Structures are given as C-alpha cells and as structure tokens.
Image (cartoon, one colour):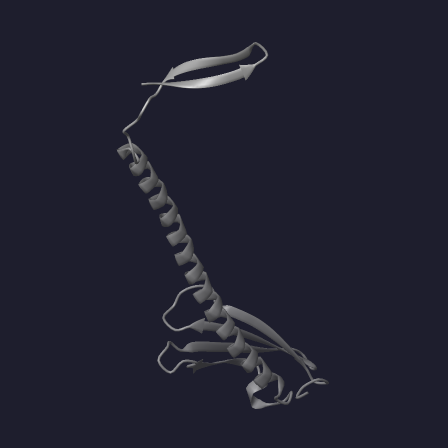
Length: 149
C-alpha cells in the first residue's frame, strides 16, 4: 500500500507516492533494558555510599560537639576557682565523666603548670573510653588578677 503526499514548491504542485512502512516492534530491546538497569545501579550505589558517609560525619560531629560541651563545663569549673585553690596546684589529675548513662565514659585529664607568680597554665585532654583517635585538647591560662571572676 502506497501513501501519497502532495508537495507544493516553486516548481508547482506535485504528488509523491511513498510506500507505507509499518513496524511491529514495540518496547525496548534487551540491551537497552540492561544498559538502563546498569546505569541506575551505578547511580544508586554512589548515592548509598554518599548517604553512609554523611551519616558517619554527622555522628562524629555530634560526638565532638558533646565533648566540646564537657570541656567547656570543665573550663568554667576551673575558671571559677581561686588562684590559690588546691585544684590549681602544679601537678596533674583526671576524672571520668559519663554524659550518657549507657554510653562510654569520657576521660578528662589535666596538668597544671605554674608559669610565673601570677600565671598558671592548665592543659586539658578529653578522650573517649575504648576509642582511639585524636583527643580534644584545650589550654586555660589563669592569672591572679582575674582568678575566680
């Protein structure tokens, strides 16, 4: 069966006869489906890895924020003591705090150094029990004039 097309151009009007082609193919080929499935799998694997990394970074930042809060509390405690308090004599000490009753404890260690007659330096180190990694560290300088303020 032929289909006729009427064409109008500068040469006039003409009738073109074209054979009508019918295709019975519908849907996708197996190669197209496999390619699409592979591409989707690749994208999902990358997204899953990104999501897991994001969750781990969120947990680490949350732990660090809690440790920073504990450190801030300890710093405030030491800042409120008089310059000649027994806790501020040169030497070292440590305590274990449990911010979560079910979770691991936090070891707070400090070292007091007398830099001069009017200045003391307190080095703090916070580490989580049973976990390796970099500890959280801070230095507090206390002067006789500002002690207890």
